[in-house]
Image (cartoon, rainbow, N blue to C red; front, side, top):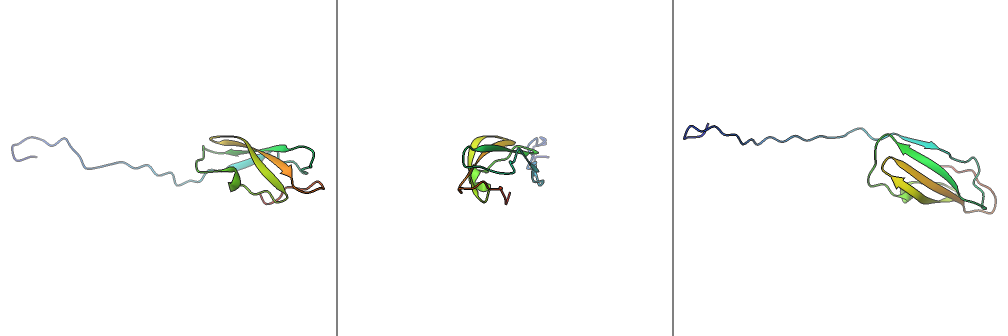
Length: 92
């Protein structure tokens, strides 16, 4: 209570919400072989929308990655072979 007898409606409290659970990623459509003739597409689906992620956050040994689209929780990545012979994508 204030000296004049008025109640104080102001407060110094604040609420903070902290998301401490990392999203879970599921990869689908990953080809067994990536050929040099055409890029193939894999889909990475997260359990929630992600931020701060870029195509260079992903690693695919033996191929290059391009981002076909990224929309919150679903990313579609194109895989292109960097070698003359077909390669198996690895290091996902």
